Length: 484
Ligand code: NAD
Image (tube, rainbow, N blue to C red):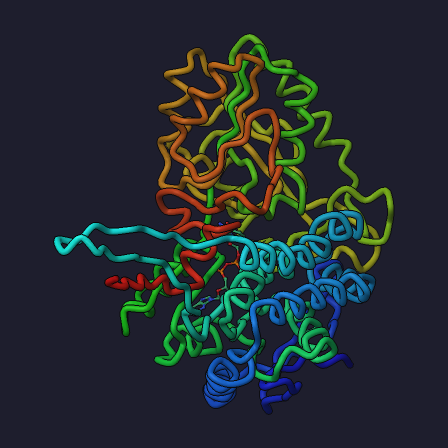
């Protein structure tokens, strides 16, 4: 049986306590995971602290940047290993992980290495009464040991999205991957050792949230900053933990994203984009669309086309090239998504397609499969219009005016992303600017330039990461003022 261990101070360590990792495809055991104890987390934080003050801090920026490039290159050299690990943990199609998860996981090290190497700080000249003046310049130092708490939907991509900038800025990290996806974070430990990242710079502790590794990391007084991606409810708990010691947090949390489709859109592009934004990764993407608002003249045509698209999706194994969609991550999550499918029905939805568990073949029926699902006919107050489902489903509502759709799309506690489909350039800008979100796409979805700010408004997040914005969180910006 495979064992996924903690990675502390450059070594893989078991802890005496294990939990099972099962395949989402058929619930078979993939291996056992070492659950980090409080003592293990203490050791990881201690190792991170020692490395922070020791070998890691002695490197020049160029040396550090070169090492991060080597990390990226080594991930690419072991592309197949990472691909296999990610797909085993999540059940997602190889084609998806090969195009998104793994290459982005590697790229995250290079992009932030480039930022740190190339982005200057500010400089001001200040007049003084004696006429001699003063100069001011900004100087960035690492924030310290960073606790990185990760979700399971894009495990390597979202973890390195934080570890990349953290290390580039000279910090050290203690990573707590999701209990559902232990493998790629563990594998990254091998990469770190191979390329010569000093011991203790990158540490991984496995486990759960409350009373387990997640809580031990976020409440540890020597963790100087916490960066988190996951559910809003968990983010609130972590924010409370960070209040002790007034430690900074970066929170990337849930969404209930609206797509807005105007009648003048490129219809085929809107369908193609909405198919992706609703169903890719089995709907388990924070930026994904769960509410679709379609202007009335094309409403029926849009619903019919999305139904055809959904019904043509092929559910299957990761290595089958014809697979469009894998299973949900776990039995627990399947139960949650099914409870929303039931709620939609109870609250009076018209089920356009889906609504349950598909019949699969053989032992796949023990897996976490779910039907792609589309509803119409619900009011904006319905549960599946308000709460994040995080499954392959959406509700489609008609609308009659721009003002109406803006009000309805914004009437939600979340504010992560939107996709706007229209050929009217003025309207595209107007609507994008009025949407209460961190990310607004026009005539596209999930088109990411890693230099741009990423994060959520309202209950979807606090802070922005990406490009130079990551420097705000991962460094302490000091002003040095020199009287001449
Ligand atoms: P989750 O909040 O259940 O878990 C995330 C991580 O937090 C896990 O590692 C978990 O073990 C840990 N955790 C749980 N309770 C904790 C506690 N009390 N203290 C410390 N750590 C704790 O989220 P999930 O189910 O893994 O991921 C899905 C959620 O993530 C969705 O809501 C999705 O929208 C969100 N998400 C957001 C973004 C974004 O960028 N905004 C990206 C991906 C996912």
